[in-house]
Length: 457
Ligand code: SAH
Ligand code: F3S
Image 1 (spheres, helix red, strand yellow):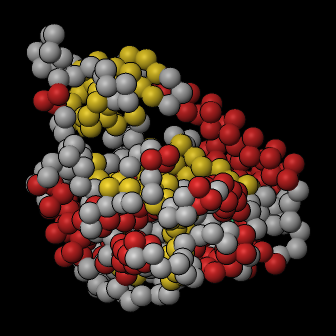
Image 2 (tube, rainbow, N blue to C red):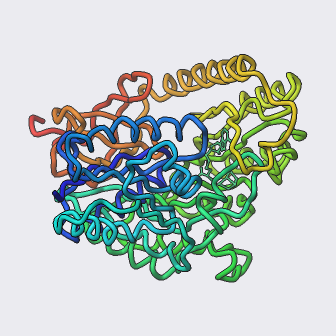
């Protein structure tokens, strides 16, 4: 009765929230299982950012709820963004769900499951679904425990902030995640130190708009924003070798952050910089407070500080009113930025957002066509960038055995996955790897540490 399977949809924030729920449940004596057939409790941690993501989770929940016919004690819970967005209305489609828990209440999941289990063990008939999607002051401070796996973890996500107040007109996140709330800097640093002591070498700072971190809680000192102050503090922790963050907002790339790339060597030269559109008219309609010229200037200034900078981005094609000329502007800027990676989305109407009520929605075929045009550019770009890596030596952080268990895996500073042979002693170390060949998403190479590269050498 205590085996829990957690399925996560959506972004890294959701992954991190699921990890925190898993850690809390383990501490209560629940077992987290990897096989969904072998669970008594299934929790779906959901995403609302596009309609397709919601439909996927609803489909899964509908399918899984059949298990209740065979086993009335089976517990099905819906957590996270879709729970927050739709609340009790989900019961119209999914009457058998036991638990609906929003984004500020993840820490209550163990109590709710304890209550459900106790009721069932006492033979009390199944009551009403528990629905908790209230706001809770301080809930940003509850996503902090890290995974208690036996295996050493080399790279860890640290949540620094929840919510977003930017009000981009297409985006449901301000509704599902609530107001921007930052964790205290000291708490974050304490967590990062503890992670470093457990062997973590790479920290990714997570939030919906990390560049705004602490803007209401801490002062700029000497022109340095609270976010850059936080990076400086993580940078000073012994044992932490690499720092990444996601997601920033272009607005956050002021002089202090750009300059940080020049003086903080642990800060990896990979920036996810969501562009959304390359048309000034559409950016304005989206309520994105920058122009295509400003965006290009940020990319150029970062490449000036770190010529080997890698960029990735998010693009929405088919925002209401997007003309061929608007899209052409996006295509042009997209090509000019030479991305290493990009997430290209077809605009999806989100009820309750300002863009949902705009006229001039774009036909699906047009969205699909624009999507393909950008994907083609991306493919050519990454083929070119990958080809340029072959024969070079990249610094790789050894994370552990790869999926097959035959080799080892780790990522370059530019966040490319690599596979190579190594000695297990090298796990957690930064090593030089000569890149020898590549598939679409993976680089293969050989360590150039004579004598310690492999057991055989
Ligand atoms: N700051 C957040 C953004 C979350 S949404 C982050 O952590 O990344 C992620 C991306 O989904 C956005 O950058 C945007 O490109 C895309 N997106 C958001 N709303 C969308 C919508 N209604 N339709 C299509 N794509 C959308
Ligand atoms: Fe969404 Fe814009 Fe915030 S994309 S998460 S409202 S910065």
